[in-house]
Length: 248
Image (cartoon, rainbow, N blue to C red):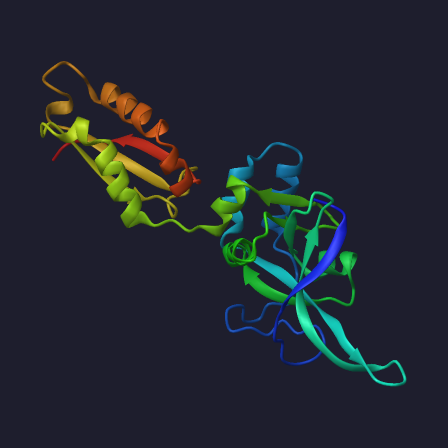
C-alpha cells in the first residue's frame, strides 16, 4: 500500500519531544520486540501465514505516529497555530492504511520528526476500521514492511463476540444435537496458542451415535456445516476449530 501520505485524525498529545510515557506501557523505551520483528520477517519470507501474524500482533506494542500539522501562520510565516494528527497512507486506488511501527528506529526511517504513540496492535486495527481505513501498514520504511488488510485486519482487531458466536454455532449444529446423543460446547481459544479463535468441543454418549456415526464422523459433519456458513466467517475471521472430547 505505497504512495501518497495523508495526514488525518486530530489527536491530543501532551508534552514535547519523543516521550513514550503511557500508563499501559511503563518503562517502554521504544525499542522493537525482537519476536515481533522475527515474526514479520518470517511472514515477509512466506514462512508464516498472514492470519498467524495478525494474531501475534494483537497484544504486541506498536507505535502509531503523530505529526504537527500547521493550521495557520503569522505575518512572518512562522507557525501560529497547529495540531497533532495521526498519520495514515493513501494509495493510488484511494485505499487508506493506518501507519504503525514496531520501534522508534523503524519510525525514524520513515520520519525522524514523527512522534510515537504506543498502542496495542488490536487497538491500532480498531482505530483503522473506525476511520474507514482498509489496512494497517507496519514499518512502511522497513526493515520489513507488512500490510494487514481484509480478513487479516479483522483478525488483528480481535472483535470476537463469543456470546453471539455461541448462539449462531449452536443453532447451526442443532441437527446434530437435537436427539441428545451429541453435545457441543463453544469456547474461546484465543489464549490456547492454537491457530483458531474459537473451538467447538463435540462429545457423544458412548463415543458415537446409535446410527453408527463415530466421533470422527460427527466432527466432519460439524465442520462441513460450519464451513458453509458465510456469517461465521465474518463473525470469526480468526477461524473455528472442532475438537472431540470424552462424554462425562
